[in-house]
Length: 171
Image 1 (spheres, one colour):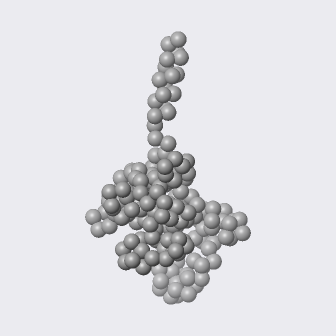
Image 2: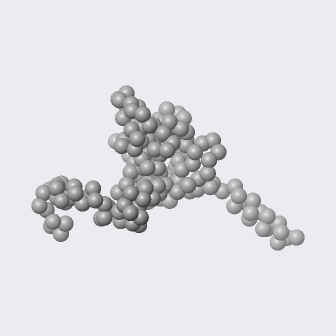
Image 3: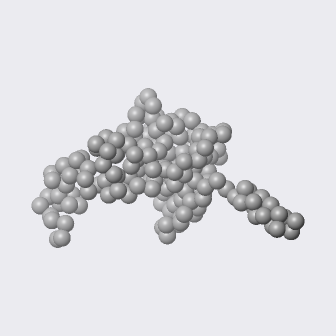
């Protein structure tokens, strides 16, 4: 009977833990955060220059929180990828985001690691960019997508490394 009580207590503790928990990355001013709000087109919110469907994936998206804060959502799990692919399907809708709030005094940013539609959606990992990139590039694994991406290669060929024409990576 005692073992059953211990197992029941452990199970009850496990069941009350949050569904997801962002991991820290060691970024200055970071704070593990879960926040709710409406996915918005940042340019539309700031300037009034609004397009259909939050710019159809061509614009930076953010979260308008329940307390009126506008927070740019700039990153997900993929290296060198923004978070637009994570949020575009939720344009104008309420979501819950789990990740890192970088509360830099100059500008707050949010790094999304998990997301779920509100009010009762399921949590999912913020890795849609890699899936979309893979689909658009013949099923290649996204991994270090930036080394294989045709657009990145074209920019590097035209502008050079760090935007300096003719500069080689080892220089």
